[in-house]
Image (cartoon, rainbow over all chains, first blue to last red; front, side, top):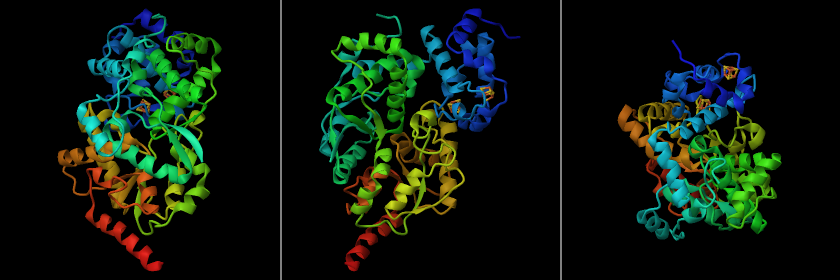
Length: 152
Length: 298
Ligand code: SF4
Ligand code: SF4
């Protein structure tokens, strides 16, 4: 049995009219490098679940396996842009505090330092050893401008 | 000499600084002057997956910094290039969104107008291929290379507009300009799987194994990549995959500009080869003997 979350369904369809055009041909799945190695990740199924606002979508950890390669967008014959649908779903999950901790931490690291890697003294020593300038945090500046839409 | 704002990107800046070093060494010799700006993370696709609005704001800040200097961006990373190009296009096309994003940028004294472009160095070098050809002094004759263009430089093709996403050829052309021999291999367009390495090591390792096996059995002596994530995946992570899945073969990896450096007469040390984890003593000897041959020919 699948339980439908109407809120989720509305939210998904709001900015994603294209998703209704999906005719479940599986071109995205056949093109997906993740599915090739891990059948638990299936973009076609994630799309149909999203379209119905299926509750287990919320609990599924599968979305986060997407490699962002864009191959499904490129090949989808219906212009659904499955990668972007997954992006919007993940943004929704984040807004509901349902994103995995690693992703929340990764976002935090960028906001607080400006970089997606921790800028340790070891990093800067290595840079200086090959005559590159040390990196300095730009987190103070970023803090003034980041925040989800409408957060100002 | 044209000046660009150098966008090295976090992965290169923090994890592979020798690639930044080689870019700073080689690009000025190809009439490309580089200027440093206080760029932040592009930001990457992981960031976008949690907070697309802030993704756009931070990308807009990066673009606005270059606009302020009146410079185009030269990027060393396909992922950064894709973010910057896509954000640029989104913001240029949507007046009301641009106005809202600019409200944020106002707080730090910046404005996005849509007057700059961001491109990967492969795109720029491909446009000035004659200059590249003139500077080759030690052609890489006989070096057998498996080209891996990766995903982000190709797709979305309507935004990247660089090469065919199904049958990419541009990086091969650029390697041939250096004298290298291209080895075609079945898994050429397979994604490197970098994004899964942290969370699903087993899956990522199997992708690496198939990629390496495919190129090795086709006769390649090394990979060539234009991307720091692909570089890490096929270099450092190749050794992890090899340990885990116990395969025999291994292939070293060159970032494209390292090969350009070799072809311009720098040695393996000068192009940062020894910062890579996967080594091939046979290939190293072969590259050293290219120099000797070139000297004899003079
Ligand atoms: S998203 Fe596109 S490619 Fe995937 S099943 Fe639907 S129509 Fe087919
Ligand atoms: S973008 Fe994600 S879902 Fe689409 S093909 Fe690539 S890995 Fe699969």
